[in-house]
Length: 257
Image (tube, rainbow, N blue to C red; front, side, top):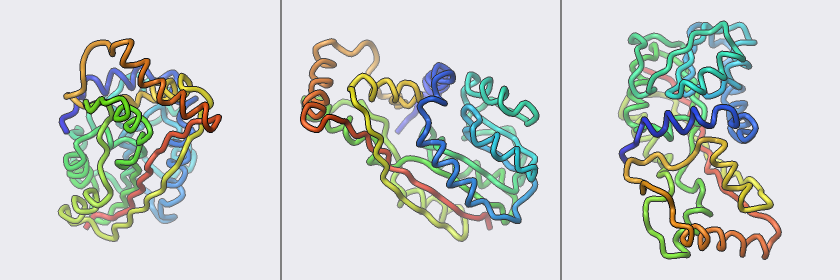
């Protein structure tokens, strides 16, 4: 899938002021990664896709790391810098950073590489990581937003409405091809509950998590098509008094050779 990086940067910059209120699941995922960092790990830590900086504050408070944080969205970096002004920030695509080879002792990336070409992102991680460095990464798998995908299918819309997420088997194979070692991948399905269609859709916009494919349909969605789409969810809401939205959470732990 070809990604529109300018669109990604814009959508996440727009979401910078609302992200923290919507990112409870992402923060839970970050906690899992932080708790998995080996106790003995110190030195240079790179956060790829730092967002508004909630994990950065926890990492900086440990006092164990010299931190560099990277994000493609300048709006996200502005918010993160307010939380942790003492660390180094770089606004760039995490697929191609200005960091030198063999730079990091720890590479940390929470809920970010799904907005990248996965192969390029992992190759860049391999390049900037020192030998025997720790990789702690989370992302989302192909069952993410399955309810939205099915709703479009129910009204006969097969267009590219939903962002395509990588499956964990592909991620593992890419890591093996790059000679990563001690690879562990865990997968958890999480459902967030909403009590209105508008709240569900607004929560996605607040995260900036809209479709980033360069093949997505441009222009305004027709009112009738959108009404049909919402009607599918309204029917489900009437039946169960709540709406579920699935996040297919992938956690990756590995070491460089």
